[in-house]
Length: 461
Image 1 (cartoon, helix red, strand yellow):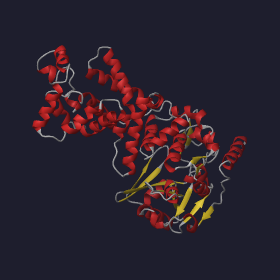
Image 2 (cartoon, helix red, strand yellow):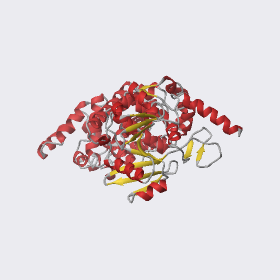
Image 3 (cartoon, rainbow, N blue to C red):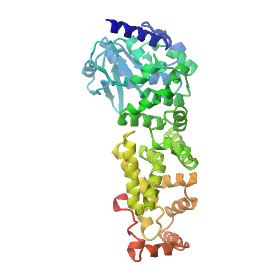
């Protein structure tokens, strides 16, 4: 009894710091918030209509409502309801229950998917193992269902705790989120220290949302971040990768990385954020890569996570590669050693999926192969499935000042000229002073100029 009383007292204090959320929401009419039902995806409307027709509460919730109020196009639509996952699943033929930490339902409508969550409550202190925490206070599982007001209080930021009813076009606001949207303020719900301990990723999310949406982080929300940044190390690497990918593919990666550094959250996430950004050459390369990524995303063009992470980790690979060559390891084995070393260290922080790791290795190996412009090697490089990605990577290196622009210009021309002109270009490279002497020192014959010990292995391209 005493324990429950103490938890209720502290819960009230935490709630009051976020603008005194109430069990009775403020009902915001469409004349004030301006979001029309036509702005909601047809799939999300169908989900809410079906649930409401069966007597359940159902609202579009979270980022979609926030983005529409900010006159932005939502990436996706989520629905919150008082129906349990099993009840939701029973109503939709094309649906499935997913998750363990958070049990959700994915409802499919054609190519669209709407994520449906059941209203959740704060921990009631009764020892229920549906809500578990580790030694640092991080939630391991959170499936305690509750009322809509409970669900609002346990969400991360006030601007994400808005519930939109497509039927009435009203927004239910329990936490003052509409006011914060209008004021362009990002404010955490509850005690920031407790909420960051529950889920350290909220610190990264605060940085991402503030940079992406142009919001100012509330002073109380921001204050504990620097001293609690080390809690990020307790987050599973796979989940950390997902959050970092959202940050880097937000269309505002440059601003996000800048905020990470200013809040002290960059240490340990990626080696480059610890070391490379302190080096002028490395910082130019990384900033340029992030700028190009932002430009493509904002122009609705495709981007490759493998390419982006290859750029972010390149200078770590480059340093390890040079160190291995200095020890006498031949270039290609040295490159493989460097790649494995960097990815192994990185896996302890952020678990980069293998499919992206494979792309990254091919892009990195091509950087060595671009220097090999004799014999048939340039033709083999052109045949590589990752040639275009590797070439774009090379151009970034040239633009950042890492390598001589002549190399990028050579490959730019080599792609488009005739076979006879290509032969002339290769012959022209062979006449560069010192080139033949280097080949003779490695040994004569075909192996020295076309597939010798330094040549990239067949699987590289």
